[in-house]
Amino acid sequence: MPTIQEILGSAAAVARGLGVTLKEMASPPVTERYPDAPARLQERYRGVHVLERDENGLEKCVACFLCAAACPANCIYIEAAENTEAQRISGGDRYAKVYNIDYNRCIFCGYCVEACPTDAIVHGHGFEIASYDTSTLIYRKEQMLAPLPAPR
Image (tube, rainbow, N blue to C red):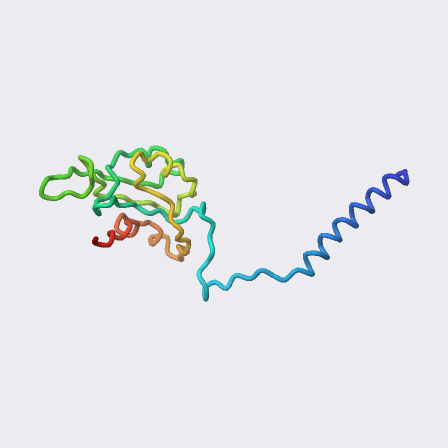
């Protein structure tokens, strides 16, 4: 048989819960106006990956394969090629000839971003990647490359 103290404690807990509910009901609703207005994302949001360029417009990726090795979902595929003096793609000796990320498998953990020694891959703020066709969720290097910097 519950005591009077237990009954009063339970009633007080219910009253506190109802108080929170009534306070929230009285406050105005928070409505996002997406897609009419741009979505407001936190700075730490992990969206679609971006392959960065340096200040000269060269790709930062030197095809070291550390991002692919760190990926627990095994969704990053890289093929390396050598830079030549006639055609320089990146600042290092090698560059990523093929760089694919399979977003069917990606868990947006950020391990690839942390593993990159040149800060070539970062999480962007893109989030509209839903698709009915899974073949469109394999992003290639051309889709992820940051735009060229504006000429000075």
